[in-house]
Image 1 (cartoon, rainbow, N blue to C red):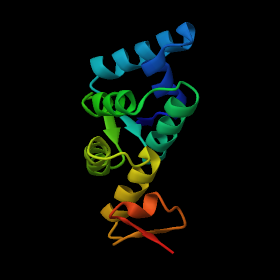
Image 2 (spheres, rainbow, N blue to C red):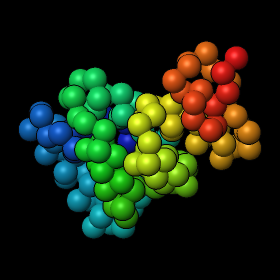
Image 3 (cartoon, one colour):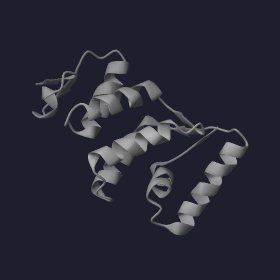
Length: 131
């Protein structure tokens, strides 16, 4: 199996560099044709959120839709698909920071009751606790 970095997913979603985007499309087509999976680490999703928000100014729902669409592609195997799905659901139901929600659901999936934080806004979410 082969893993993918954030920039691969960005080229696929944004297509701002045609030469690189075409390489990515070819890579994905080959994986599909050969029925191979590409591994997507959770940290790639966290970084993808940051890049799409800050560099490309995607709005919240476009980011969530993009990540959700990626989870539906059979060529990808996510490090923790359950966390990604819970994160998307929580993000659609709230206005909390996307990165914070992903962190909270990742910790929760790993048996953490809460995530300790100094972030007052994040602490209002049920999986965070202000210290």
